[in-house]
Structures are given as structure tokens and as C-alpha cells.
Length: 119
Image (cartoon, rainbow, N blue to C red; front, side, top):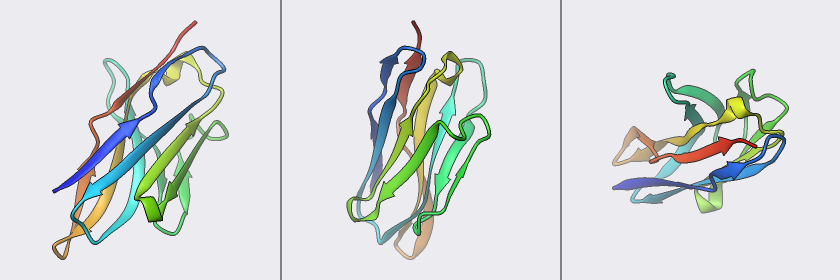
């Protein structure tokens, strides 16, 4: 069984920063591409950023220059640094990972962590 557990969400004022973490645990061979998604109330879940196992990153246009995705392969952990936060960034943030286990590639989701940007 593989689990993804996020942490680091909270309430922050506009212009503030947060750092989200996501730890992959359980029985698996390797973690491949990881990503962060977010879902605001009444909206569809959207892709925020991705990072491959070699460190190649992509970002949604709405967060470029403000958010930074990174990972520590030795710890099976990914991070999302959120800077210059705006009220429009308020959402539940989910981590996502493609994990190789039992000879196959599986996609897993975390339970989500709330980020609220408000004065």
C-alpha cells in the first residue's frame, strides 16, 4: 500500500508565503513524476506544477515566478514553495505521484491540504 501525506497548509495574508510538503510512504520500487494540483470551491481541480525524477519542472502560467516545486528523492518527498500569495490561490492543494510498484506504474493522490489567503 502506498500513501501520500501532505502538510504545510494554513491561513496566510496576501503577499505571504507557505511551504507545502508531500511524503510518499509504503511499499514501492520508485517514485517517478510528482505534481501538485489545487481545487478552489466551485472550480475544477487544476494542475499547478510538475517535477520529474530528474528534476525537470513545469508550472501553470498563473503561478510562474511565484511558486517553486522541488523534491528530495532520498526522502521520497516533494515540496511546493508558495510565495507572493494572492487570494486567488486559496484552494485545497493535492499532491500526486506516479509510483512503480509490483512491476506496474500507479498514480496516487494525497488527501489535500487547505491553503487560505486572506487579510
